Each structure stands twice: as C-alpha cells, then as structure tokens.
Amino acid sequence: MLPIDQPVDVRAGEELPAGALQTWLDTHAPQVGQISSIRQFPSGFSNLTYALTATGGEFILRKPPAGANIKSAHDMGREFRVLSLLFPHFNRVPKPVALCEDGLVIGSSFYVMERLNGIILRASHARSPLPPQQFMALSRKLVDTLVEIHALNIQTTGLATLGKPEGYVARQVEGWTQRYTKAETDSIPAMNESSAWLIANQPVSKEVAFLHNDFKYDNVVLDVNDPTRIIGILDWEMATVGDPLMDLGAALAYWCEPTDHPLTRMFNVSWLPGNLSRKEVIDRYAAGSGRDVSNISFYYVFGLFKNAVIAQQIYARWKAGFTQDPRFGQLIDVAKALAAQAVHAIETKKI
Image (cartoon, rainbow, N blue to C red; front, side):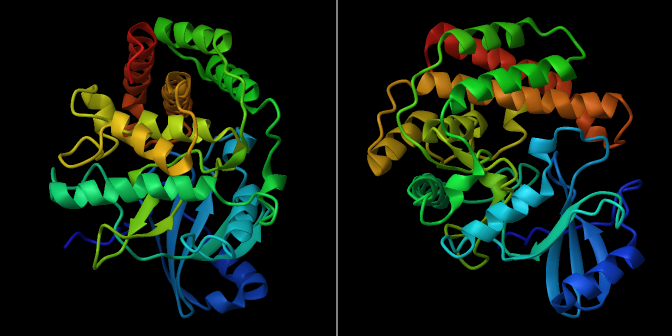
C-alpha cells in the first residue's frame, strides 16, 4: 500500500509564529482547538502548505511564499472563496474553515481547511507506484473528473462570479507573456517564439466553464484502500471561469509521456506504464464532454508556455534569494525544456 502524504519539519525561514496563529484561531476558528504540532509539506512549488495537528482534528494552512508579488496566483481570499463555493456542489474538495487577510498575524494572509487524508502520487515515489492496470483505470477517472468539473453549472453554484470569460484566452496569452518578461533572467529564444505564435494563433472561444487550471496527479487525493478512486482535488489557487479547453491544455502540458524530456518527466507520473497517452486523454475528454477538440494544439502549446513561465517565476525568486529551497535552482532548465517542447509541438503539429 502506498503511504499517505506526510508533512516534515518546517523548512528554515518558513516557520509560522505559533502563538499568534493560535490566538487568531481561538477567536475565528475555535473548532480547530489547541495546536500540538505544525509541520510542512515539502512538495509543491507555489503556495506554502502546512499541516496543523490540533485537538479539533487535522487541518491544512495555506499561505503565499516569501517574495511573491503575483497577487492573482497567491490570493488566499480568492482561493478560500473558490472552496466555499465549490464545497456544497462538488464533494471532492476539502472543507474550508477560516480565512485571515490580516498580514500582521503570521506575516501574510492565510486560510485553514480540513485535511483530506489519502494518497497523492508524487514523482518522488517508487518508479511504479501503481501497476499498469490500476494506472489505466485511474488515468481514465482523472479525465472523467475534469469533464465533471467542466460540467458544473457556473450560474447556480455562483462560480460565474470568479472571472470574466469574455476575452479570457487573449487575456491569458497577454498576461502570461507579461509575467515572463518581468521574471526573465536568461535568454530563452524558444519562449519568445512560443509567445509570438500564441499571439498570432488565438482561437475564438465558444464555451464557458469552471476551470481548475492546475489539474494533475499531484493535486489529486486517492482513497487509501482503493488508489483508483479519487476522493479529493487540491490547489484551486488558479481556478476561474473561461474556455474549458484552456484547462484541458494545461492538463496535457503536465501529462508527460516516456519520450518527453527527463526534466519534465520528473514532475509527474503520467509517463509510467498503464497511463493514457496525451492523444487518448484528448479522445476520452472529447467523448465525455462532447466538445470539439480539433484545435487542441493551441491550448497544449499555451499550457507548456504557462508552465515554463511558472518555472521561470519561481527560479527568479530563488535567484533573488527569497527562498533557499535547492529544488528551485534547477527550474531554469525546466523552463528551457518546456519551451523547446512547445516549439516542437508548433513545428510538428503533434501533441
């Protein structure tokens, strides 16, 4: 049986002021109770995630990383609101508990939610965390879950208030290009080529849906007793409403295959035996959603470009000394590999 994802000791420089946190929780979330331990989840490259063990149970605290100045990607209030809107309608999200937008309490805004205990497939697991037949069943369910998320009624759930779908694709292309320019540290010609191609080849969006925008294996919690059953979806920090194929493209950009660059494979397990190929993911999504996916190459290239920008942003923060996490130092090479993959997809028209 695979182990449940476990936190470790808090990294140096990322400690929480336990006394101030306890005082705030006593007033705003008394159901948490007395905290007995604070530990940190070592995985992930964006918002910081802590495990709180308390008399009221197990909880998760999320906060932005030090040096983050990208409000839309680290907006704790918005992420808490997403969970609050989703929880009554989609039973595979953690229950939100409390939000603190006062940066003076622990040094930044944060929110607390209940912990979902289960298996999370990390790239750091053994080479074959699941046998091929289980990976096949799970990868199919993963695609089906994305279809289900995109089928949520954004009006009756209130999720429509989370974004402006008109012009969504154009804003995303422009916004992520600007983010790259601001975070650029090295010359990567493939990034400039990908950006220019995306600007010149934007499709006309025809549908609007609720998007997770970071849909991949390590944001999925699996049942301990049946690892092919999905019990939770995590990390809704980039969720919004817009063109659902943008979400599919983002998922495909994470969906590595055995022939992909080793640096991109190290962040996922989708390349292991039994998993659907990217083409099979596209075909299953199309069959389940009924959507036209004939122009999916644009969305795939954008997903690769966006992931490269995210890697570049985190690398830039590391280079500026905002974090000492040694994993971040290699992200410049990840950005280069993703950019090269995007150009290859443009030139070959293959996903």
